[in-house]
Length: 479
Image 1 (cartoon, rainbow, N blue to C red):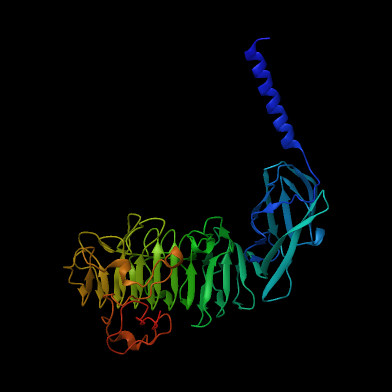
Image 2: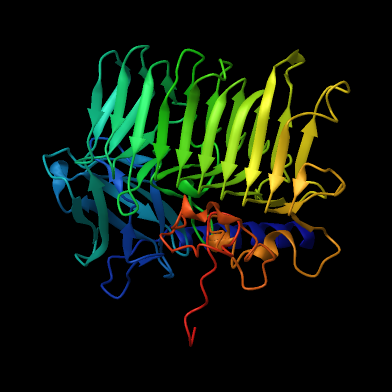
């Protein structure tokens, strides 16, 4: 036999023997498993609804394979479910990990609903019972929140949503013409993906400084990133609020409306009646517009309107007033459109424009000009709009409708995001408190008498208040 063939045969035999070593399994008590975590902590979930899965790794660091069973401590009655190596159940037997290998374990939870109003604790553990008789554990913990499920609900008579439990909205929440939906202070509405608050009647959502009404998406978990990012910090987690043409007199006060596809869209209507009022509220982090109004009368004051993919404020026609508002575009996922756009048309159709005013506001963002007035040539010089006693990022500063305005531009040392202490808190742009160097300080007019406290409850001085929805607060000494 040729030497080359003998060498080849020896190599094959060595490989085979090596593989057989990997296939050896041991019941020696010296051998144990390793785990990537000692405790799996699942995010808070709504009761009665299965959570997203969380995973961890099971390692065999030894020079022999290990056989084991995985047993849920609470048995079939546990709210937790596990899946290892493609097998699921409360008890999974006959599992094997060759020497130096690993496998995934996935865990989910579904906490039963109850009458409790607070958070519900759920604890269990997975017992890994080795062939040697040794038992190892990975602990499991989760919290559940009971909620009132509103599925495809149509409100056809006057209805009040209290704040006892949060509401989980599937297939949208529709307020019929002639009906009023009253939302109590402190109520929380969680909308499933694409769901909207669809208003043909009227909504009265009036919270308070210490009982804010929250409207947001329903995902309570986080993206599997390092560090994890809560879905609540991402745009497009639900639809938004749509106010139909037949709806008037809507009020949103002390509301936190965030992370939708849009904030408030007001369909074309008469500007003789107020379409909606938005006071002391936050509309933040939308993939579309924060506020889009067509041919409407709207009143917005003491509010933060920030971070939108297609512009924070988009007004076509009608009459609108903005007072003590911070309107800023710093969306993390795109540069987005300008912070404010006013126009006398929508989608190529003319919309009568009765006026727009911005007083004591901050209008800024990443663009060279954050205020766009887009009117037909015949009215562009006379269109009735004004910006007064405000901080404005704009290239053309010669417009006579800009009065007592402090202009900023990108050539200045401090501009745009530098106005704010940390507009990227947690990396997702939700805080717009004024920095000490902001040029918005002290430029507001005497309208502070109508809004004597800012969005955070800080008193405004009667003279020399700051523009925007937040009054500057000096940093605490020693911080």
